[in-house]
Amino acid sequence: MSDPSTADVASMWDSVNPQHAHFRSHVYQEWWDMWVARHRAMIGSLGIEPETVLEWGIGGGANASLLPDTQYHGVDVSLRSLGEACRYPHVVVWLHDGDPRDTLAFVPEVGLFICTAVIQHMPSHADVELMLRAAYAKVRPGGRGLVQTRSLQTRKSSYAEGWQRWVCYSPDRAAALLRSVGWSICERRDVRPDYSYFLLAKPERANAVA
Ligand SMILES: C[S@@+](CC[C@H](N)C(=O)[O-])C[C@H]1O[C@@H](n2cnc3c(N)ncnc32)[C@H](O)[C@@H]1O
Image (cartoon, rainbow, N blue to C red; front, top):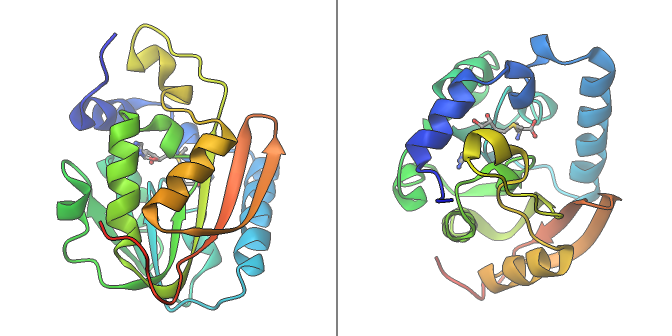
């Protein structure tokens, strides 16, 4: 079983039921309300009012809908997701199709980085690490982050079958990775046994580089 390419991942996300990419028109209202309420509370806990945001894997723009007064940069592999996220006038979209440092080359420094419900769908652990380092480099010193990971790996024979938990981390392994990138972990919230959120801060004097 080999890891998919970014193009393979993009192709899957362009064709899967849009509910999986959290398009508002394709999810139940109760689910949408639960999702945005959870993320609103977590972003509120970060204690900042960012002017600029970077989200990796913006999907249908659920997180973007929470921060309408920001300049919101949304990355995705799926053109369909980017088209959906563009419905929000404050969103600027960026297509990821290779090296994350290239994808982010023209994204300005941001005050907040968000990556929720994406890492488990990425092609490999190596890709996740590259992405986290590239994104961290875009966060201003003192900026914040909200990252979610999933554990309990159940890899199947192909990405088409196993995409829901393709790249998983135990919470401790995820925490170690985030620290190695340079983040300080303010808080970890395990909302389910296999679903962890990390509330993050970039030190004023950054201690890692991409
Ligand atoms: C489940 S949705 C999450 C959307 C949003 N982050 C949220 O929390 O509602 C996953 C999104 O990640 C995108 N995605 C999957 N793999 C990706 C990758 N390697 N890089 C960037 N985006 C990716 C998919 O196209 C999809 O739009």
